[in-house]
Image 1 (tube, one colour):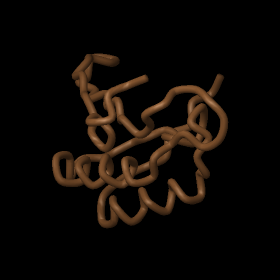
Image 2 (image 1 turned 45 degrees about the horizontal axis):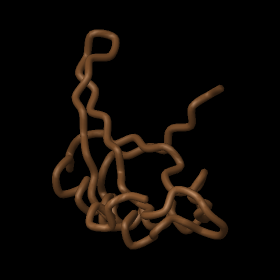
Image 3 (image 1 turned 180 degrees about the horizontal axis):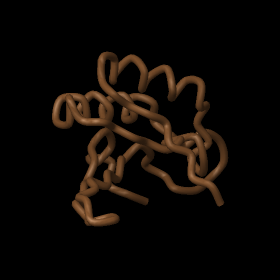
Image 4 (image 1 turned 30 degrees about the horizontal axis):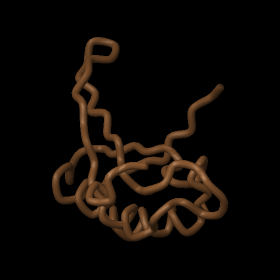
Amino acid sequence: MGDVAKLGTYSQALVEARGKPLLIINAYTQYNWRGPGQLVDYDAIRQVFRRLKQECGGKRIGYPAIGAGLSKGDWATIAAIIEEELAGEDHVFVEWEK
């Protein structure tokens, strides 16, 4: 199990990719990492994207299907939260090819 106090927060690492700086965000959106049923915390997703807008506003923000994979969240619900919290920002859903 994780630290429940981290829900709705994120950590970050600045790396270099192809000669340019890239900010990597690790969003804390679930407390349990395994088990039955939905594990994602929608309020935590909202808090993370609200903070990203406050702290990274004006920059292009890319994100994967946060909370819709192993944590079994509903992507339509999550996407709506992201659209609301990042309203007016330049943001894009990024889907990695396998």
